[in-house]
Structure formats: C-alpha cells, structure tokens
Length: 114
Image (cartoon, rainbow, N blue to C red; front, side, top):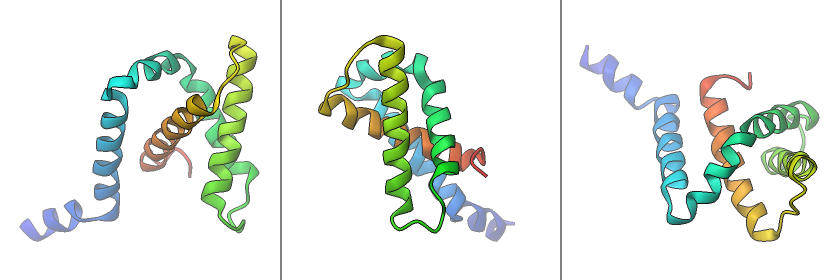
C-alpha cells in the first residue's frame, strides 16, 4: 500500500501539481500582486488565448512552448486593450506573461488542454 502511495506522490503529475500550486500561490501573494486581482476578471480572455495558441502553433514547431506563450500573450494583450483601452507597457506585459504561464500550467494539469 505504501509503495502505491509513494509511486503516486512521486509521479510527474503530482510533482507538477504541487509546483504549479506553489508558483500560483507565490505569484498571487506577492506584494505587487494587487494588479493580479485586477486581471482576475479577464481570466476568460487568458484561457481563450492559451487554448487558441495550443491550436494555432503546431506541436512540431521549434521552441513550441515559447511560440505558444508569445502567441497567447499577444492575443491576450490585444483583447485586453480592446476591452479596456489600456496600453500595456513592458513591465505589465512581463507580469501578464508570468500570469499566463501559471494559468497554462493549471489548465495543463487539469487536462483541459488535451
């Protein structure tokens, strides 16, 4: 019984889930995390951008992870700017990119990107 528990606890999925949870928690709890609360209402845009990026960038593309993240970031910024009229600067784009990575990780671990 203990060997089964140990095997599950050390599986890639379990380790990924723990790392994703910790990173998300750290990301949202940082001192400058106030801006993240602002973006919570635009999480649907983020999810849509991530899912579209998964479909738009083929899996055989070189550096597919970076390409998909870049595509999702550009798509999110386009939708966010259209909805709010706010122009995103480089600092905010970096924070959004980090936020998108956390959301992507959560979607991936949930199996929502399969």
